Image (tube, rainbow, N blue to C red):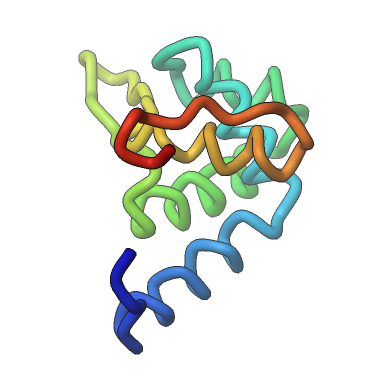
Length: 102
């Protein structure tokens, strides 16, 4: 395993900061089953519309989710499914490793 450079450390710090908010974790969990509209995310996470938009913007800017528009509705999906391995690790669930990682 190679050493982590400063740029990578800064990226990790940003990612962990983004993941430290429980509302964002609820949004990621809601998207675990697949793409959802902003309204669906808002209702399932019990967030106000303004808060939902703010958190989705942060997740989008971090590269964890991506939007796509269908008419007047915006749907979000997970852009990096590996994030769930990190979430599972934090929750104490076993993480499946690739043969290279063993």
